[in-house]
Length: 268
Image (tube, rainbow, N blue to C red; front, side, top):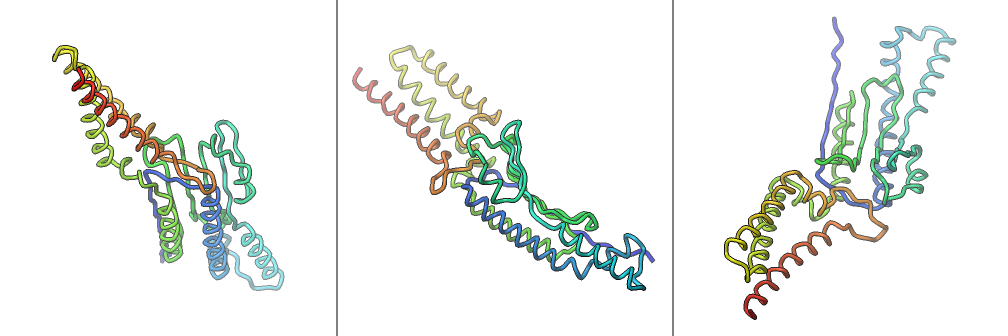
């Protein structure tokens, strides 16, 4: 009779994330805790995994000793590794040590992953922050034959990553991008129309339309919102992200341009 096997594969993506090196360390310690829990459970699963893989039954002291040695070996293979890319250079190793060498201004990729023994087939726990991905740059993936552990790890890590979602996360979603684009188009179009008050109506309308279309094209290409609101940021300890400041400055600038247009129009 064929043996029943069960597997749990969970995956989630985020539009944006902002945090400091301390936040990354806290996330790393949570991963270490989850891997430690999996290591404890692995001891009770080892015999079945070992026998099904190698077809060996422990029926003598020599084979028992060998199996115990193999159990210790596989148990020692559990761990956590973080890899950080700075353009063409990369560094990987223990979480705290690697994060000490991170240059937050140049980082292009961070991958935090659990290390599992080769005997534990299909086990995976990985969090990736990728600055090169235009959409959903944060990915969490958990796979395991232990459904309870997989669900717990996925829920706890999702909750921790959620803490790093900036307030501007809404504007990186489709609905938020459309809202930001519409408001920006209206403000920019009105500002240009008023600023060019002394020109003919056709010229003013053309300038307003061209400005709105230009902004609309950048938004459609995903350039506007991504440049204005960076989806990923590693900030200084105790500092805040640039996304909120950029959004406030942009909307304030466009609004002030509209006000200036109204004032100039009244004076003239």
